[in-house]
Length: 472
Image 1: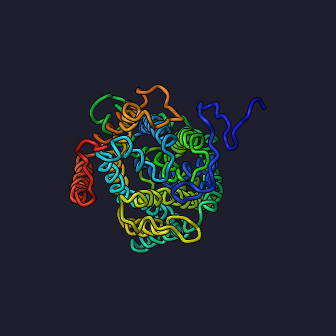
Image 2: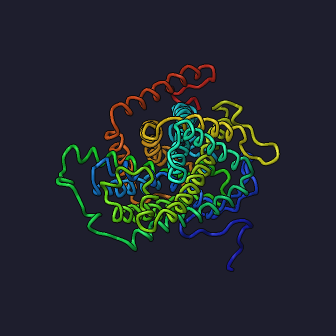
Image 3: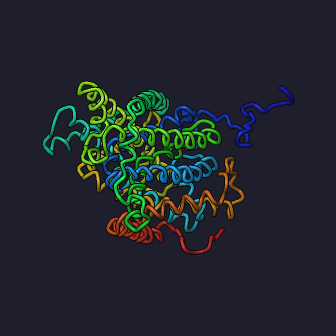
């Protein structure tokens, strides 16, 4: 070894920045106990929940044919470009809360950034439980394959129960959670790998290429259908940024955060598209559209009822794993805001011995249990549209604002092909928004306006000046 190397510092050639060896605790009192495998596992199990197993019929219905697979392709491009946005911001500001810090620094920590910060927390309190509830609803739907039809109240009670179970699993320290994430990740990959492999072994090209007349005519119906299919795909891809929400508990964040995000997007995109093509090749799309448990129906056609029941159990396990990862990330966001005095103080409460955000975990568990009483279609469409309006497009712009206005912020990872990458991400989100439907756009705008009004009402008392020049 040549020269003298400072203790705790080693070169990281791939990203061209020092590789940090963190102290056991991060500045905000949390433990940096999650490495690359734990972060990647958390991202991937947040992405691969029950989503693709319940949304394949919905996605096919959006374009009325197997050409809906294009939604997965477009969604993968948007997810990869948006993932690079998250990677650049997350590596530059690796603190717990993710966008709480990104938006604040980009738009001005003493001015407009305070409003953007508040709006992100505002939407998180609504959307995080909705996202978790969608997994609980899917869990209840797949359970019916094993036990038969359930009365509506029993199905809803099951969704509430699975939210309670996930909350109990997360009520522990971060090192234990990281180990659980890797264990669940292995089972998730085994489930998807089994279904994907079965589809490839029994591949039938005729079913995949069974396009209806006029399937690719570039008219209004085609583009609106593609937008709807991409919306569903983005719901299923959602979670690649999971690591940014608990970045304050990540070891060596400049290296771990970008790699975990980009690996997750690429691997899951390949798995999703391969799995979907394999399923459609076995279950004709006209039959798949009517299925409520497509993975189970797929396996039943190939191997019979017993094997289908085994796969159903694995899908249920995958759902629990996804809820686990999602609630882990969501619980850290209001915690980070509360620590900085920008949200209700009770969310800043840490467990006295295990040092995790105990109140925030309990709140997210209770809220998701309540919202699991809604319908799946309402949950999916609402959460994606509101996320786009309040966070996604604003965060893409945040990269440009930080590059131009904040040279003091060190960026250890820089997205390739900038600004093309940002333009693709922003355009993709806008395309999905336009095709989502007027009622969801209006609902999202209503929530946005209500959030702005709420913030402006409390800003004077807090001494905040969001629309005035920075006094500093």
